Image (cartoon, rainbow, N blue to C red; front, side, top):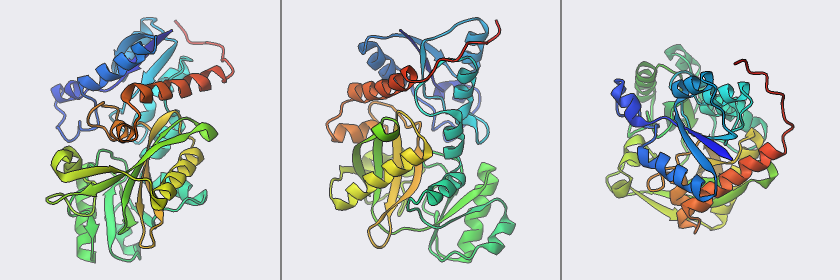
Length: 335
């Protein structure tokens, strides 16, 4: 079985003029090496494809794969994470992780939270700010928390993200709107513990790989798992496996969100508890980082005794089970 690997390398985009922060979500070479080695160890032939531009060229040249291990983040628009899966769908090539619908939905934190709220999963009160005029309609109670509606890796989150008054609200929203050229999501600030829950599998077969509590250390940006805190996690963050009743509630909430959104194969759900100790959904990452050393999901799994090879195996097993149970579609791609 031939498994192609699609990915976005940081060095590719840095060489094309992108800033370090803009390229923060993209992968390092050791991430691709780790995935490829793990997939090879499972007995599959691998083929490094690269980003959507390289994939397009390979498809046009007639190359095909039995399956693609896809971790591309994309570059432009709310549908950027969906671009490679949509292209693979058009050619009838199966792939790991979620489909274009889920990836487009979950990148937009506001749209995701509408769905989450409708299916009964606890999430803090929120409002999407598309422009500064929307602040005139904001009646939420301070403190609030502001972040870009469609970024990852903590981008746009820092010491000023917790908002205590109208002046701070205006300044924070203006900065995000101007800097990221996208809406702001405002949430009621939750004062409790912060968790990330690892998940592998799809639907009712999805299982938690453990609950990791994120503990900020002295010198860290306060009150948030910010871009700077993630970048300097060795000195700013302590990761601790949590298995107390509150953490168990976090796992149950995360699985309800994962299944309700239709996420597949593997990823993470981030939560924070309210003043009553009830974990609330913050966001989901259906394309979680997979660097063997520095990404949250492998770190979490390692704390729970699940090594990197086993994590990749669970992702592959879930994808293959889905693929084998999906009726085949006649290939109509034009040569």
